[in-house]
Structures are given as C-alpha cells and as structure tokens.
Image (cartoon, rainbow, N blue to C red):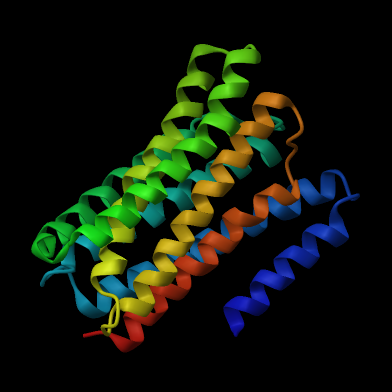
Length: 245
C-alpha cells in the first residue's frame, strides 16, 4: 500500500508541477536521487541480512552493486543538470555509472539462473522469448526507426542502442527466475523486481525516443516509469529482507 501511495504521489507531483519550469527540473532531479538512494539502501539491507552465501548470494551482491551504481548515475545527472547547468546531460559521465550498473546485476541473475536451469521448461522459455520479441519490437519503433531519420552523434547513437539491449539482458533472466519461483516463497519478491526492471526498460525506450525526436525535457511525465521502477525494485528487496531465509 505504501508503494502504491508513493507511485500515486509521484504522478500527482509531476501533474501539479509540470508548468513550474526550472523548479520542476531541480525537484525531479532531487526526487530521483532520493528514490534511487532508498532503493539501493533496501538492496544493501537484503545483502546485510542474508549475506553473499547460498544460491542467491551472488544475485544479492549483484543487485546491491547495480542499484548503488544507478544511484551514482542519478546523482551525477543531478550534479550536471542542477549545479553545472547542463540541460539534459546525455551523454555524460552519469551514463558510465548507469551502464556499469547493468554488469553486476546481469552476473548475479545469470549465476542464480544457472542453479535452476534444469527447472526451465519450454513454457517458461516461450514466455521469455515472447517478451524479448515485444521489447525488440518496441525498440525498433521507439529507437531504431528514429535513429534512421534523426541526425545524432556516434556516442549518443551507441547509447541509444546499448540501453535497450542491456535492459533485455537483465530483464530476460529475471523473468525466467520469476517464472521458476512461481508459487514458491520467493515468487512475490521476484515478481516486483521483474516488474521494476520492465518499467525501467519502458522508461529507457521513452527517454531515448524523446531525446531523438525532441519532445523530452527534464521533468517530463515520461520519467514516471523510472520512479515506479525504483519503487517496485525497492518493494521486491524489502520482501526479500523480511520474508525470505
């Protein structure tokens, strides 16, 4: 209920402050730092309580490192935009932290998935393939098509393609892990974690499309899936911390 309330509050904030200009930019940047920071703290609490041992140890460590790096990315974005007055700092040093955050998450989830590889049946694989096809189709519409029309520099073009690919790299194994745990004690936490990563994937596609076609601005409501994604991830970590052994 608290996660739902926060999500509604975030949406109401963007709606109420949409015409506030520079105030919205600063307020939304600070909000991202706070929300991503809380999310990384929750992932750390999971790691501190259950440690790096056992079948999920690598995944716990990977998510903590990933969330902390994403927090540093949000902090870097805020420094560039609010303090250094760089409008929409993309690409920037913040992207180094964002991109590096994918690696430990991918390693951790892949390691966990390898433990349960014998339980991955054809039905689960088909669901994962269908999801991958949907994400690939959305990437074609939101990213590849505008890239063929709009002029952009090489680095921006590389990042525009890299983010959806990396999103898929961590979303697919998380989806398979969630389906493997379906009906078990760990199902609920992985459902929220997977949903959070799915929202992050959607947000990346909207952000990239917006920067390519020119409709995005800092504080745009299209940022909401990022915030909702952090809320879902934090909820998943909280469930792991309190309910799992």
